[in-house]
Image 1 (cartoon, rainbow, N blue to C red):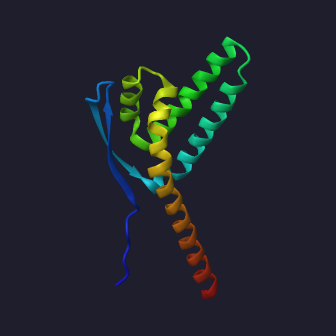
Image 2: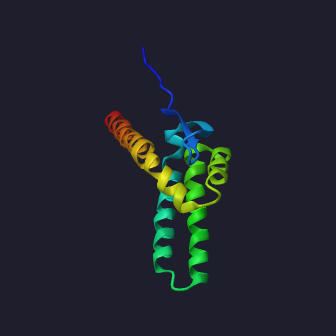
Length: 139
C-alpha cells in the first residue's frame, strides 16, 4: 500500500509571565513547517538587516527609523511562527519593546522552530531528488 502523509506541524504553547512570574497569557499555536519555511527565512534575514541598521544608526532619527524597521521584522517573524493574533498579543504584552521581546522569544524560534524547519527542508530536498531520479530512469 502506498502511503501519503500530510506535512509536519508543530503544536505548542507559549506562556507569557509578568515580572512576578504569574502567567498573563497563554498562546497556543500550530506551525505548518512546510508552509512557513521560505517566509521564515526571509523574515529572519529581515531581523539581521534591521539589527545592522540599528548598529549603524548615526543619529536619533536614524535610530528611530532603524528601530521601526527592527520592530516590523520582529513582528513579521512572530506572525509567521505564532500567527498574527498571537504576534499582536506578544507585542502588547511587551508594550512594544522589540528588544525585550526578541531576547525573550527569538531563542525559542532558533532552538525549536528553525531546526525543525531545516530538517523538513532537507527531507523535502531529498524527496525531490528521489522523484527526479526515478523520473529520469523511466525515460
